[in-house]
Image (cartoon, rainbow, N blue to C red; front, side, top):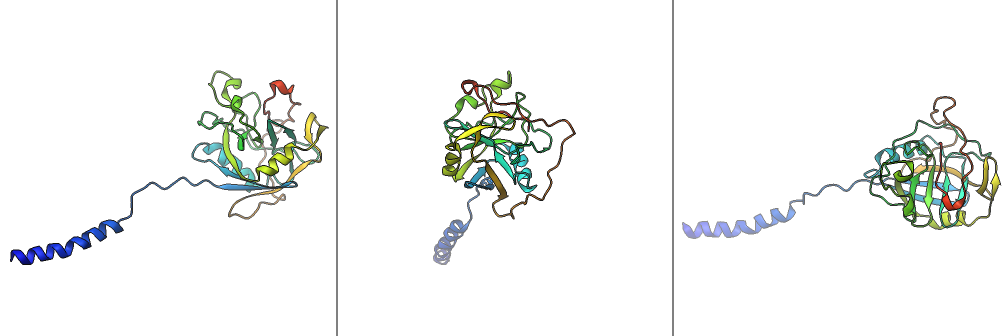
Length: 236
């Protein structure tokens, strides 16, 4: 009898090992990072977004993309060795109406390194809406330091360029001029975002209308200060 039991045990051992090997490992699913493609007059730029680090900023940006808001807007500011900024002004350099501003997430641990994308804002840390900028270099001075003031709050990084950084560099290398409400730094020729879409979704057309804020809440930004003290500015 003992021999029979031993034989059965030996036969079952390989089956138990196979079952254990087949058991899937219990791992957490990695967070999904959506991607957005900006189709510009200088080429395409693909941005990977970080909803796990900047959920409000990413949701805000994706909504503008899906609304078709960025279609027909321009990059109105390009400073070599610093940044390229856009997302609000039309070809006529008229500011579009935006949704309400979002809370800053600059304290998310992400740094304004080369290739990252951040929310442009005015002096109030919680004034960002549609504008964004590409960091051309490691702009660590734009990182969150503390919540004492708008200067120490820094700028919210919410994504990075994963394809087309050469296009961003090409935009930064264009000659610039003063035009419309801006005294300087407007690329010549104007660089237009023809359309933008979330990867895997149909591109949003310019015929769609973005949600508007209350009348009078949106004004064109003032010209940038001297470059030695320059910061990404926005009231939209």
